[in-house]
Image (tube, rainbow, N blue to C red):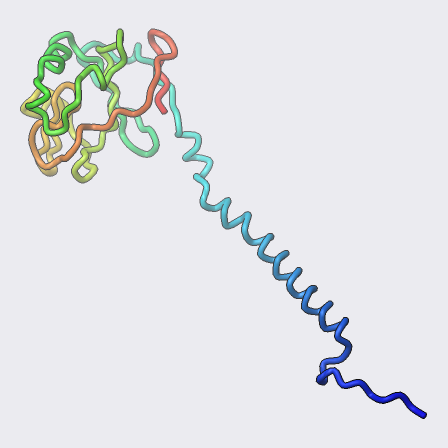
Amino acid sequence: MSEPATDHGGHGDPNRRDFIYIAAGAAAVGAVAMVIPPLVDQMNPAADTLALASTEFDLSKVQEGMQVVIKWRGKPLFVRYRTPKEIKEAQDVKLTDLKDPQLDSDRVKKGKEQFLILVGSCTHLGCVPTFGAGDYGGWFCPCHGSHYDTSGRIRKGPAPKNLAVPDFQFLSDTKVKIG
């Protein structure tokens, strides 16, 4: 007498089928686990960008009344040593006269008001303004006619905001860390 044949729907042993499903699922999870880290890592900033995240600058290179332009995060950065006259002009401006009201004292560090540090990109379309050509003794963007005062605040033209002030701190009397 022989044993009756068991029909599993033509799929063989149910234990073997379950094992194949589990093994295929584990392989898929393993493949995803191997693909995710490189995808996430490629979204991180490049090493050269991270190296530019902050920079130190020796302020003794800038004489009173002069401006130095350095590159920071791929953009020009204006480091200006303002004269007492420029500082007074910037401090005497009424906030009601400004398109983007901001006190001069909010744009510089207390005790170091002569040093003004700005991102040198016009807030209209990102052009680089030139110093000393504007109506207010500051910067002028020749591309579209924006005028900035001696504190980098927009006074006239299409630019909607003041020139940006990056995060910075004085490490000593002559050294500043930007970023």
